[in-house]
Image 1 (tube, rainbow, N blue to C red):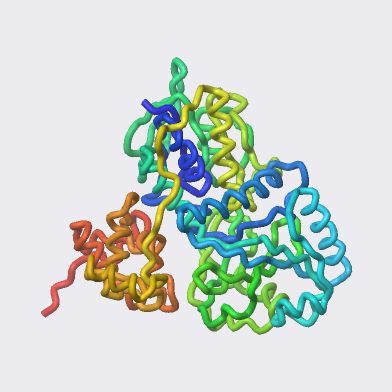
Image 2 (cartoon, rainbow, N blue to C red):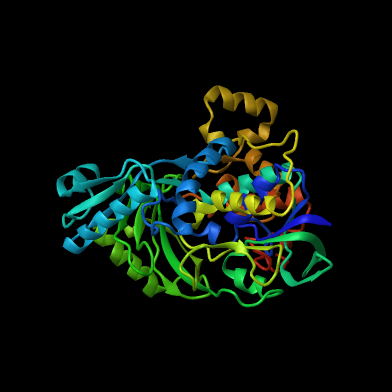
Length: 473
């Protein structure tokens, strides 16, 4: 019997688990996939938005500004890559310049600091590779970039250290309530709890309707991306936005915390993550309006992610109207990544209204991660003396060692796939995208997990990289 069951281990569910783990209650997180951050969290623009875009007075505006400050602090505590590179919203005509003024005014009302409106010359001085057609920009110095899946992993690892039980491969199939106790049935087991927090992302409406009346509808919007090699990283120092439209913040060009350049997304109503020629051509054409000479031939990966769009036009952060003790954090559109820590605290505040929460006498709220390529020569040598596996480079592109891969496989939340290793220590995230190191990572997974080569997964269940053994004469 748990006090709280959280459904979903994306960035919102992980944030709620992190903050709730500091209290003397029993918390369980149910996740359908074989790892955390497997939905929207792992496939988005990776921007920590400052808060100038959401309409003043909305939940989106409130949680964005609070969440941006919390994200910065959490990345420091949890040793997650974070770079306050700043951003620009650029304009090409008088209509865009009027929009920029409105965004500036809205940002001031929302409490965003350091906003500036720059003219054409000032804009091009800061970002000289922008199109000559640019007329001006809104400069947002406090905008930042992170690795979303790393933050989610760090939050959940810390929560697990504090006693939260994480149940992966548990897809919720039914929910009932009797005598004030919920029973949640998954494909693997049953769990009982006094309270439920629904953080199921694009599936949150369906999860709610397993027990409650229809109160909101989620539709999915697909966004397609290019990830370009580090050779393109000098195209811009900041995140470059075009003026937003009704379908979103538009196609952006941005550095990443790992030194690449990300370009995208488009916005297409879809429930699959297949990339398309038409979608990628749209992204390319729109991005070239911002920065004309991006070398798309340096593309190392295309991917797509789904984001939730709800029929209310704002975050849904409330107790179910039809089911007491069931709390929805649903329809979390952009700026959902930025807002997640604030949304996690909203879940804590809601629970405090239900029962007394007592902070634990001691709990973990930070962590330190070994990144071999960031160590000094002296630190590297000391580490290799303790464990020679840190002296063997497996991923040359990202300088990831065997020791780091073994750490990922035996961590608090163990990696069970090649991509699971990649999300934890960046092995396979470089120019060759695992072309050289993927086989070695697979060998290490076989050895460390004691499994057959036929059981090695690329990512989720069913993505086995080998299907049968061939006899070679």
